[in-house]
Length: 254
Image (tube, rainbow, N blue to C red; front, side, top):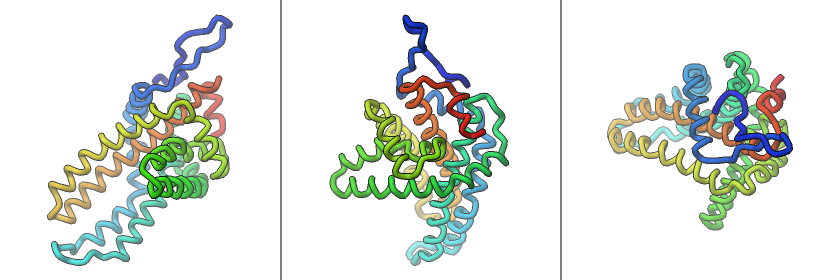
């Protein structure tokens, strides 16, 4: 995807024909956005994730086969990582939209926006997690359905400034009619990310510290790509449904 909206052609009335939401367009745009901002985006994720990584390594430092894990420290590391994910989503959302409208990605501005939107991202993510969990408890299919319809709730909340409940409703509106392509995008992502992760866990199963270090480095890449992917999915859903351009959509950040 270019840095300006892609339209297939002009209609008979001179209006723009909206580009379709397609898996290949989403993957291509995600790869291009990630590659163009590789260093700043990875730096943002690394800085925000650093406390959780350090705590996790401390918990694993003296681990040996057969030993009981340091569950309290693992718990703190897990909570720290979860908080970090909300900051990362808000921070990278700003960065992605700066890139889309052809503006430089400045780290200070990204971090400031991420902190500003962290609480909104947290509440929205919590509601999505609870809804998806309830769906999976009821049956796998409802869980997958709920995951798909609420998959862009956090970018909605961050970009459009909606409350958590309004963001869920808006996400459902945007994904309606695009369920299978959205599902395919995230299935492909989790397969591509999950296979190397499983290999790392198998190869380093007996070396806890090496596993933690390698997994942490790998997760930095995975988390960054996941945040960029969610933003691109959200943007292209809006692009396919609404008459808007990148400048108009990203003006919310000004």
